[in-house]
Image 1: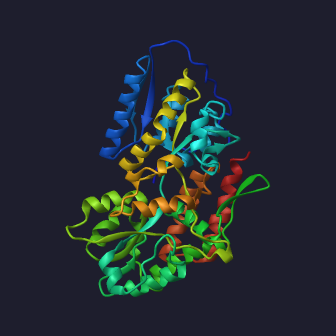
Image 2 (image 1 turned 135 degrees about the horizontal axis):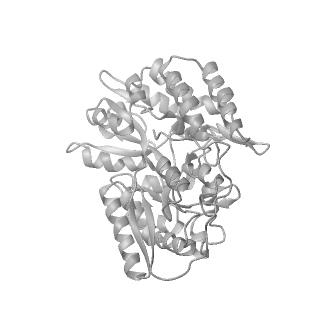
Length: 425
């Protein structure tokens, strides 16, 4: 998990900057968090193309890292040396937007860019009444399945039109569990985002607004999937306890060796599966289970898209927005999505035929795009501290069987609301 210095309630509310563009020969810094070789190459190529087309408004590519971006940005904002254009994710923008470090893009975005991205997706970067980032790429969570083990187990293979219910998923995991093989492996070394976002499938919302304030709630709708995971690990023994301390990549060797039949993973893991799978290994990309519509559930899941933002201190906000609009044009957004094995946010980019791949589940991901919703963590001040100090240790202990549901609820809700209240002062 990314360790952060927390921006508390004393964070400054107004950072000066954002003056109008002026003069030629300017160079803007673009902090990119692309890290896959193919994605870095595509991003650099797009920057080079912009520079050829805009010789008097050049952009300098600056390589960053997802592991350190929050603290890097906080230091650069406080020191007045922030990059002009910032690649990040929506969940990381909240405190920066409230602190006045990011430009409100509402009046700067060109109309074609506003139209091509659904309004519900714009809501993912709408903070304190303003738009503080352009949602660029997003990814659902999916099931990566061992084809041979599914066939041998005789379970129904779900698709987007007919996904498993959570009950069917639990039954399938039992059918797939045999000597030497677990039905599923839950990689839970970072359990909070998964738990919060999967609660949407059962009609739950762990973080919500009540009377205009962000609060934590953990009732039956929110606990249904966590209770299932705990059962699979501790009662049914259809999931290994060791998986709880793993990241997604750490489960792949066991998956290829036939120790796990199903892996709940982010959509982009398809690249690693394709690259690392042994010759002849058959695998499928399946949708996550869906909750009961009668109980307020369904296939919806929460996401936090990758974003492009403009620093409030930039001397050239319009040039920065023009560059963002250039990267977010449908053909270029689709090119970035193909390189990163993600989904673009643009309606037009989603129609790019290069995304509709058969062998690695590209079509499954495209079909899931309509069911992606803003993660409940978005826009919640104090979420990083709640996640690190309260929710992560509580969920890890609950999934491992060390504490029960009552204590989990107490720690998530009581301790969580105490933390969030400090950010409202």
